[in-house]
Length: 453
Image (cartoon, rainbow, N blue to C red; front, side, top):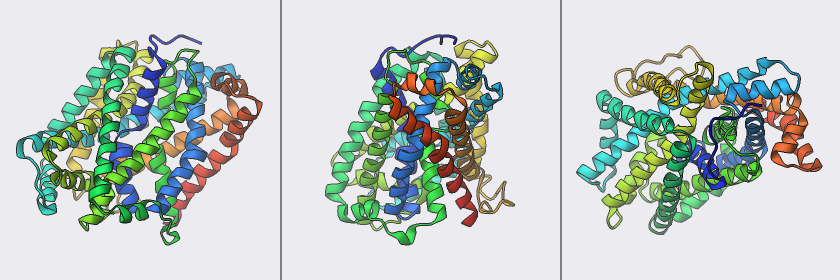
């Protein structure tokens, strides 16, 4: 196997980068409104079951493939397939992953731009203590395509600059600053929200399982969020693991990443929903939940404006930590296929994502009445942004995950799993069975459930 151009400088650095990849907008922005939209506790239960039975085995497989392949997602899959005397065509799983990363980053950057906009607006105008004013501010932002484009551009530029600096000096160094501050502030906010809001209603909503809300759509959305949040199915961890030294424990990275993402997601729920219920807001408020309810909470806090600015700075940082891993996918591929230097590859990939992101920008204003896939059942009123979101969460990620499960369970030599993950005989067998049977059945079942919506 070839050697990567650089490595993570330490185990802590790799773990923080992996955490950053998982703990981003999926955990902080998307989790609360998905829980609210899909009925609360039953969705959380399905989400956790999906993480344990499907996402965790897939993450282990990605890590093993990446370190053994020592290349970008496509190159690592091709190398491992070749070692197992299998067709190089399996590398197409990596191609799907890179394409998915570009699609996700295109609209992810737009949402990251919202966080930057809130930093500026909150610092300039402070916070209002009423829902109507906060909702009007949010709606005004979405209605301004030039402002959205400006912030989208700023977010993408920052991401490109960091990735261009490399693995240890760019992505790892940024993650060491981004993650600890975000975690600390989310904990403080959750404690405050629970003490000041309707904690009992929030706990009941998050953890009480009401089977009346159990539906095929709920199962599909829970699995899709797990894939979106952690990023499995995109082969992100294949790319990241290629930079891991042989003495680094990959199982530890997977466990810490999964547990930290789950903990942060639940903490964000505890930070958002006590305020939602105390203020009698709609928990199914959609994507704007984070940008209306949390400012409302901050408006009632001492030094609330300062705290709100700090939060949106850290929200931007969390979004950046995930964006770095998404941009690294096409950058690593361009470096190997096209021979581009890292700065040129970062600039080119970022430009492509930025251009595609303009469709999401316009879907909130100029193109708000355009439904590009109106002829597809369930997408009759889906804007370009909605289509990208659903396409990646409910199609690209499960398809990539299914391909990785089949590859890891049936094609990749078993010794790769055992050696790279340092598994015993029983542990290797458990992961192999999960990849061969549990993961594919779970993905296919959840995907077919969408037909019953």
